[in-house]
Amino acid sequence: MTSRRDFFKLTGAVAAASVSPAAMAALPEIVSMDTPSTQPPLPPSTGRPYNPVVTLNGWTLPWRMKDGVKEFHLVAEPVVREIAPGMKAHLWGYNGQSPGPTIEVVEGDRVRIYVTNRLPEHTTIHWHGQRVPNGMDGIGGLTQPQIKPGKTFVYEFIARRPGTFMYHPHADEMTQMAMGMMGFWVTHPKGKHPLIETVDRDFCFLLNAYDIDPGSATPSVNTMLDFNLWTWNSRAFPGIDSLNVRLNDRVRIRIGNLTMTNHPMHLHGVEFEVTGTDGGPTPKGARWPEVTTDVAVGQMRQIEFRADEEGDWAFHCHKSHHTMNAMGHGVPTMIGVDHSGLAGKIAKLIPDYMVMGERGMADMAEMEMPLPDNTLPMMTGQGPFGAIEMGGMFTTMKVRRDQKRGDYSDPGWYRHPPGTVAREVEGTVAEPVRAPQAASPQGTPRDVEVTVRKPAGHAGH
Ligand SMILES: [Cu+2]
Image 1 (cartoon, rainbow, N blue to C red):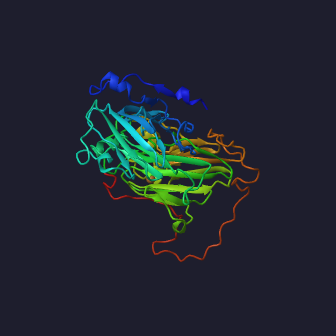
Image 2: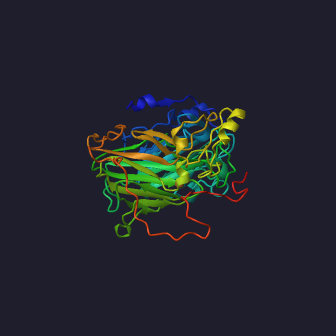
Image 3: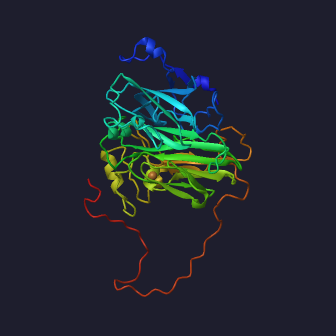
């Protein structure tokens, strides 16, 4: 992995009219990120020690210590975010990316966050879940004046409660969250905490969703439910990095949901417990084993487990439409419909015409069909055994015996021990023994054929 220094691009002076160059020089430097790939953890250089988190396809914002206060500088601005290779979205975010950088502090830290607004409209930041003085809660109009374009505001409070939090605007919220304005916040405990375990790896990311028409780059901000890109930290599979861990590591994954629907998050291979929410650590007697936990809108969940099974384990939202990308949601169900003859006739008129979904949709994932510019195939990704047929909120957790402590790099595909992979059975399969069937009133029973017929106009076309 490249060193942090290579990734950090210090940007020039801020064009804020409200702050003089002298005053601006007194603010913390603006640090910006220009890549959507997962950055290595940022160990604390000052203050109390902690085990830093790794933000999936994200990064942690450096701070400076000034007179015992941790100072951060967030810049709200338009950004270009690669959702996955082949598609870039025009979003709004912070410090070069959407979501913005993760902020990591320690319980009891006094923090000062400068917020410079480079958006075309006003904004604020709300510190979701945290104990703050009311005037620091970031609700435009209610607890503070809006931050106008070009202006810089400062927030200051003590991070009183350890836990898993997020930040987002509370100003023109529908637009600004639909455009990607959000970020993660972790407050580490200041010492041994009876309900917060020490873990070897601590991952975090936000669930978000966009409605971006194929061929375009800007989200539709008025969409209420019918989003077509389901993302983790504004990345869709195969753009989401894998979670790479060492065998027997204790792992924590922190997840926050800023979409408009719930996401049942499902991890293969192990059982986990929900050890905390944005409300704080879960009492031990209220924890139970799960393999799926629902993260409702505006909620955060942290799950923990021991990664004691080697392999490449799927980790995804269990809503099957949320593991699909933009292309394909408007396609009618064609299973069982016989296209023979028809395709040839249409192909004479439309050379690229392709029949879709006659035997299910898997054919589409295997033949990489041509797409409009700037969109993603519905089901995609190549694994060691072929097409993975996933998109959206999907990735893998790679558990390896030889992964080094503190090494978050991708170990490649799992090499299964001989005899441990599901395989084809040779030879013919005997017909099952069936109970004798009475002749149907219409005549002799014919071969079962699945035909799906939808009422006319059901697809809404
Ligand atoms: Cu989902």
